[in-house]
Length: 302
Figure 1 (cartoon, rainbow, N blue to C red):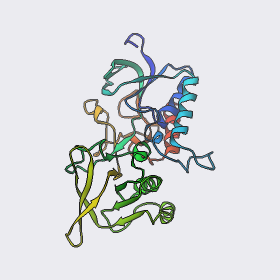
Figure 2: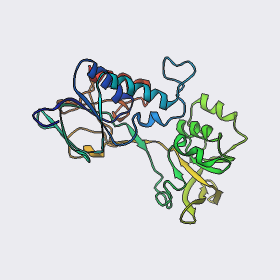
Figure 3: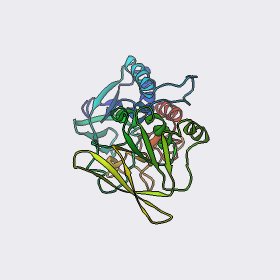
Figure 4: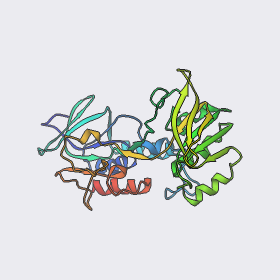
């Protein structure tokens, strides 16, 4: 689309909030395009199983939920363009969105880019990314059948993904910085059922990932109480230490963000710039739940 013929709605992202919004806007005959740099469905699509989404008493895989949302949006006429958004200019009535695939124009913009995994920032993490260091158990877990793994983290994601990884790994060392798990009681109960395959190491930092230059071989940590260095033999490392908002492309946009980068909105999901909205996990105050994200997408659309 050109400045003379803009889309009615341009949605940045293609996760549950984005897809939900698109279902509503396209159903009302508003021309809508989603700009996505990765996978349709976002982090939800690479979640093994979602147990708390309403209407699925036996749970649903993230991929199935994402696929259903996309097919529904597509049926009403939603378009998708693949590319990474690099800047948003909202000063004029017609908004300009710069992407790696070119410039796009729309009367309104919905920011629904969600979050991305935080990194440890330790030696070896970038060196072995994709060669033993991973952030998605559903994507890469099957590569480690009968292998030894290290999982870093103590929250819901770390525990849920560790449980999933027991389907493949022979043993998992779970490294937790604190002295307790932060995961829900439900997940901790499920963890008990696979305790023969998981050893939890509390008060343990993750300091370095080592290998032969091609593959990971071990992880170096520290017992924070004794100060003793620890070594964990590992064929792979999965990191689940939290999430950060995907909003770097907004740095020069004027869109108000929190100190850590989440987009600030009012109760109607409007940002401080007229015609620019935000919904889902990228929004300051979001609950980080898929059900909430789809609801926010519908609210923003309305």
